[in-house]
Every structure is written in structure tokens, then in C-alpha cells.
Figure: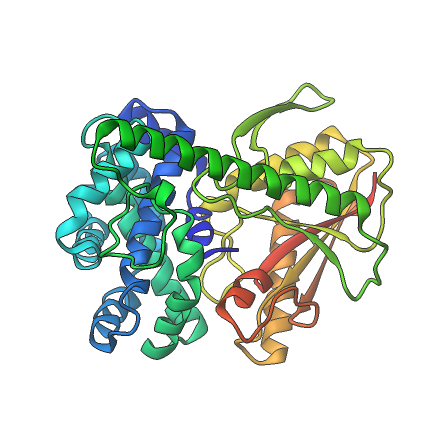
Length: 394
């Protein structure tokens, strides 16, 4: 999972909807605009990852960020009531440092790309900046990153960040080669054509990813239990991260508004597809569960997804599931396994508290043994820290 997606996964639908209502825009446009804002900030770091003095300045700025407080503050920031919060001040300092004299230009690019009202790009950036600071602070503390390792992480992510950047993003801030169709033309007609070409290319990329995932799901050979099939949401650069929100009506009449590429929709497709039998190898990764740093305590941002999974379990009374906890190898093995088990158990308990019979649930921590990513890389760490769900009866 790209770092932009990891940051965006911390946002709740409540935050996105609140900001969208205040800006008079659609939640999907606001979500994509926030993704581009986060990418712009990250590009400001990755483009200067070779400057040790600059990296150290950013590192020290975000290292002490109170991630939990920032997440709790996001609803107020989205509603416009958080102008005096420390998170706002931190975000302002970070965005000024990373975007330098180009901040207003970048904000205008983002607002124009998603047809938002004047000044909306600045509102998006004022929320994206503290969110980015909070996430980076968490990563630095949780994985014990040094300034040098932090720089390596940002260099590693550079190519992925490019896919989320707003059209016409200044090359001075991110000197990675960008296709001509994604640069700003001098004439307005040129801007319009370039933008349309960019949207077309990104749209084709998304369709190709979805097609690949579908074909993979239909053609995967049976695997041994020790090598689980993990159904994860695909990377969707600046096109809705987890896809557009769709409505799914459950057998008991409950209606869910869920992302098309999220765990809920993929789980429902599996449940309702009679040609896909229950097995011990097909796992579905949760994509919007978050925990306190190094702990098993679920954050409030996990509530929506827990409620959705509860609704699905209640609507399908024969359904039974197992919750699996996985983590990377940044701690000792015993601690890994204990934390993985505790996180899986806590998720199970949350479902029970919401009315799901405990006899339909099981939880197990697998630690780092069943890693799906390379634990020697930041990308692998992101893939391996996860809570997954497997259907055991339907």
C-alpha cells in the first residue's frame, strides 16, 4: 500500500463528509483532493531526501506530533472549528516548509483539478498537513526510524507519490519525470486538453487494476494455508483511493454506503457468490481499522468499518468468520505475536459488543510468520501490519 493511501485510510467518512458539506462539494471530490494534497506534501519531502539538513528539520518537526490528538481533532478541522488547535499550527509550519513559495499555486491546482470553489484547495491543505504530520510522526516512533531511514523511506515512495499528484504539479518541487499530458500548458485550451488526457490515462489505469484483480480472484490456484491469499484493495491514485461510495442492500433490509474497493464490498461479493466455496486461504484485509501506537487499542476512526462488518454478520446469520492479526518484524518475535493476538482479539470483542454471537467468531495472532510483504522495506512493513478476516462458514 502506498504511503498516500495509508495516510488517507486514517480519515473517517464523517470527516470527509463534513468538509465536503462545508465546501459545497461531493465527498468523492474532497477525498481525491485530500489525497492530492497529501501527495503534494510528501513530494516536498521526497524531492529533497538527499538533503540531510532538510530531512533532519522535517524529521524533528513531525517526530513529536501527537498523532492521537491530531486524529481526534480532524472532525473540528473539517467543520472549520479548529483554527486555533496545535494541530493546525503544526500543519501550517509543515506545509510552508515543504511547499515553500509554491503553496498557493499548489492549492489552486488542486482546487481547479476537482472543480472546487475558490479557496477550497487551501482548506484541503489545512487538513491534509496535520494529518500527514501525525502519520509520519507515528511511523517514526513506531518503527524507530532514524533521519537516514526516514529519507530512504521517502525516496522509496517517490514514484508512487507521483501518481497522486495534482495535474501541473511544479517540477521544482518534484523533479521526477512526469508525462507531458500531466503538465500545465500555457494556453487554457492546452490545460483543458492536458487535463482530459490525464483523467483518461488514470481512468484506464484504474480499469486495468480492477480487471487484473478480478482475473486473479477467478484464476488463483489453490494454495497451502501457510501462504494465505490476502484480498487487499488496489492502489487507486487520485481516483477515490478505495473507489466510489456505493450502496449495498443486505438481506435484512439494511443499506450500507461503502467504498467499491473496500473490504465490505469484497466480502459481500464472496458471500453471495455460490461458486466461491469457503476455504482456509482466502483472507480479506480490513482497510480502515487503526490502533494506538504499539497497542491493541482501536481508535475511534475504526468505528465505521466495525459497524459495517457487524451489519453484514447480522444480515447473514449462518456466516462465521476468523479474525487474524499480523504485524511486521520491527519488534521481537514474542512481542509481535502477543500484539497481533491482542489486536485480533480486540476486533472480535468489538463485534461481540455490537451484538454478534461469539460462537460465530474466532481470533488468532499470526505475528510476522505469514508476511505478505518484504519486511526489509517500508513498503513491506505497511503490507504486513494488518488485521484480516477469513470466512469459515456461509
